[in-house]
Amino acid sequence: MIDEKEDSFPKGEVKIGFLFNHDHLHQIAHSAPIAFELGRARTRQPVVLLASDQRQLDYLQRLAGAYPGTRVEYRLLSLDDGFRSMGRHLDRFLPFTRLMTLWQHRSAFRDLDVLVVPEKTSLILRSRFGLKHLKFVHTRHGAGDREVGFDRASGQFDLVLMSGPKIRDRLRAAGLLHEDGYAITGYPKFDLHAGGTRPKLFDNDRPTVLYNPHCSPSLSSWYTEGLQVLEAFRKSTRYNLIFAPHVMLFKKQFQVSLQHWRIDRPGEIPLIYRDCPHIHIDLGSERSVDMSYTRAADLYLGDASSQVYEFLHEPRPCLFLDAQRSDWQQDPNYRHWTAGPVIHSAQGIEAAVDAAFASHHDYLGTQLELFRYSFDLGDRPSAQRGKDAILAFAERLMLRPCVDDRLIA
Image (cartoon, rainbow, N blue to C red; front, side, top):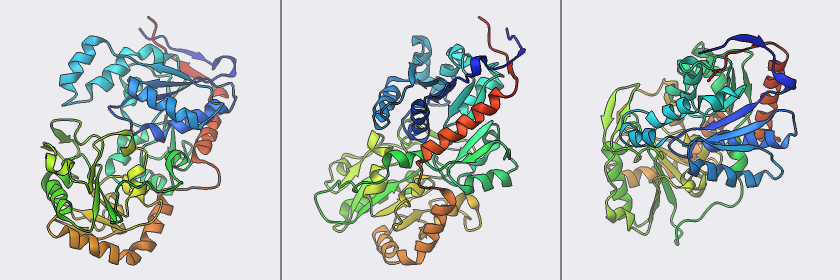
């Protein structure tokens, strides 16, 4: 049952949780740095990091090494064997494991006042699982243009931490912006992974192209053009290729696009490409989420992934593969395609790469403008700015009563 009563936060404390509940690691760097900065702030607000599997927990603890003196609590949200077994079958069609993790561990979330998340699935804790008292902070993940980042659920958070003014303007245009419920704080992932020397992945001096297709069949170039891209670079005597797609592309046997209905099969990567010395394939290691490849490449080849904006941290040539022949020119969901030439087929792609390198000066001003609009970066690390915004939010919560409707066993 649910017990609803008016109450204030005890002893001036607001217990803050950071949830990491996904099939992969790619969302972690968008919120974990803020948690570590809160853990170094020596405030009265306890901070707990909740991970849904051991791999995420291990990764979080390694990242914490960059924040000496941080004091946070770690908690592993293990799933019952029965749910885990069912998930092996049902996860191919829906986020069953993620939802069951939220359901099974309701009591852990009941004990929190604020939950900080980089995704939107967790909102079900409040909308369906009875935790009406819980306040949600959205760090988002990525600074891309896709419409899914500005859907109805995006407006259901109590506080949204934004990378730059673009996010504010898109949410406002969609009627989803709460004027007292957002802060522009920058991009915590840059705190962790930007800077330093560019990684070198090949024992040659060829320019390196990063091919980064999305997983969604309605957006991705992989399903119809991907193997042709790999074949063209296998035959190339002038370019290296990093093939590092969205980490979820090969996670499922079938991929489904829900917003624009389509289902497709990503297939397999033939051994001939895995064995090619000037092609580096990574379908989901830690290096595929820590900016190693966006920093190592000389040219970005992609379609709908927000990683193009991380690539533009250092402006370089871009090339976009529009396999759907989209009507994109006036569409804000494809604004990133103004950062370089757009082609419709992998046929003649080496020549298209040549042309993208040669014409980069024509796109440099646009790239700089896109980056400035997407990221508000300053002298202070973004995670510290995110910490300040959450502490200010917690202080506001302590100044007014809240409804405590926590589940009673």
